[in-house]
Amino acid sequence: MTLSVGTETEVEPARPSRRVPFWFWPLALAGFIVVLSTIRVVTGQGDIASSGTLSAALAWAMPLALAGLGGLWSERAGVINIGLEGMMVLGTWGAAFGAIHAGPWGGVLGALVCGALGGLVHALATVTFGVDHIVSGVALNIVAVGVASYLAARFFGQVEGGSDVQSPQLPGLPKLGIPGISEPLASVEAKGWFFVSEVAAVLRAATTGLSALTVIALLLIAGTWYVLWRTPFGLRVRSCGESPVAAETLGVNVYLYKYIAVVASGGLAGLGGGFLAMVASDAYREGQTGGRGYIGLAAMIFGNWRPGGVLMGSGLFGYMDALQLRGGGAALHALLLLVALVLLGIGLWQVLRRRAFVQGTFAVVAGLVVVVYWALSDTVPGEITPFAPHLTTLLVLAFASQRLRMPAADGKVYRRGEGH
Image 1 (cartoon, one colour):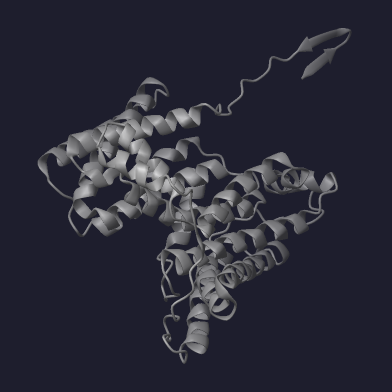
Image 2 (spheres, rainbow, N blue to C red):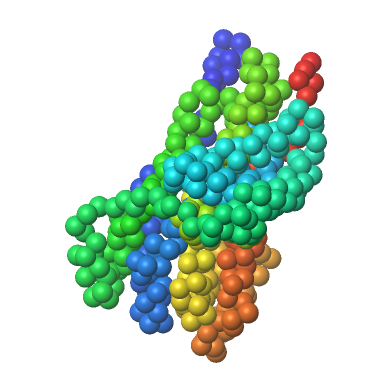
């Protein structure tokens, strides 16, 4: 930018870019694999980075990523969406109904439509009637549970193999993969070589037996980044979340774009519910979401309202879910070493780089406590194991909160013409 003063022109120095360079991601992945390899060697826990654990982590991460992606669409347009859980609940029922009557792809469509209807209700309440966004989302979560329970009893209760609380078994979606490489990668993984075996496990998990819906979800994450950050349409959506008054002065139909974003948000969350019913399980079951809509919301916040961050946050929570289901307390005990290293690293960074002595000291002390607990124990108590993913959510949000920036107009009630 240039500033003109009289006949002189002063050139404003360019601000340094805050974008993470492309090469950072493969380097970060390699570093993470090195850490996992080290923990496997030190603790002897092979499940830490086995292809089975990573495949399960990817499967558990996808419904969280779809819910988080739905939250991102809504909040980038300025509408807080606490109702992701309710939209996922509607999606689980819609997937079962559609799959029973029209096959697996009918289930995918049913999940999308039912979730989008939940998004439409939320948009109607918040955008048109100006209801507080939190109140609308909480109400939607409560109502969606009752609606799904009623519909399940109405449509599945008298069907063979179904009941008032679950559907009959659903047809499965096709599996995708690259043929001919699973066995060679499994052979390398079984060797137990440092780093190399873990790389083989990652490749095997990413190329073997992927559900078609997993591939679709990954494409939706990439597509969201392109649409919202590389197209005029996406710029208009994001402008509604940053400054709807300014967007209106430029001719943007703010109400329309908010509606589109919130309905899309509901469709994506519903698709996450459909994933739980059709991929993670083989039927609709009451209470199937288990609070994953809220964890998806946490993944979106952790990801700083960016698609790549949503994927990273969902992957972390999905990994914790998979590890506690496959390895139990012993595997989570080994992972405590990773938690300790992360806490110590965060603490030192806070003290040395940010000069945040209180937060840094707290993180270092917490890391040392975890190290001591890991050294003095052999496993994680069974009572804590099921809570591990939720505890991870709390810790991640606590340490990530200082670098977050939500859209400026997120959660604010907008009325057309209020800037005039």
